[in-house]
Length: 255
Image (cartoon, rainbow, N blue to C red; front, side, top):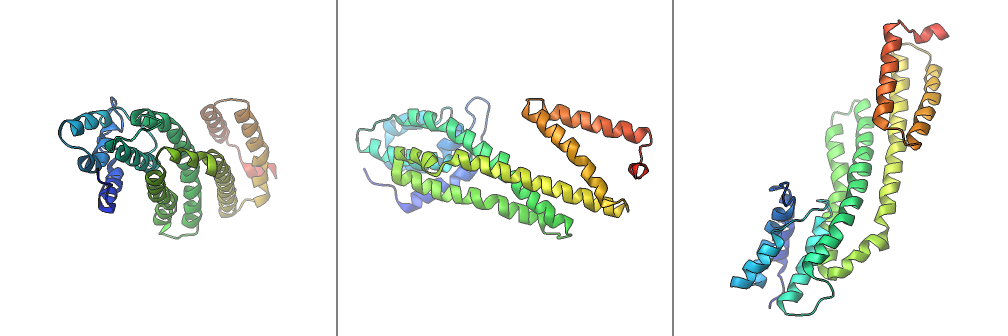
């Protein structure tokens, strides 16, 4: 059978932007993934064989949307091999199930848990400085890396097929996810400190008073590392601040 043309591969890649357009609780991204692959499957198969392959791909599937192109590219390469009746080490459906969970875990940690708060912190810095384009800066910075993964991942997956799994290990994406999250924490901590000192200056309160918050931050961090719920810590801290305000606590009275 014929190989897939660049135009067909481009159609599949563009359709992956609609991956979650038919998301449902039964198959999650399954129908969206099948919709993306369909132009390629039409070129590779005919009649009953096409129907059988379509039924296979219309089942359950779920991974991180930014890494789904990597899976789709590899699946296209494997479908080409299957259409030529070539033997493969792993069944295509088994391959999808094998990579979906690791890609979802890495993608959630890297993009949702790390990149999003990191770029949000940068955008907040611009907003504090009065730059009205801060929301656009956030959108630009946040989408650069995912867009690169969408393009490079699809190409890499199509060229390497099942060997595209090596990408996670070779580039240590889980380690990168941790580094991005750590950088985001440092940046957001710096932004918080900047906002505190800016507010103290606006209220004409000595800036040195802001250092009194350091012991509280260290205590909260220590509690979080010991497994205490972060939400519970936030609620307790908020409750303490509200109680102090109700009893007329004045920071300047301590000076």
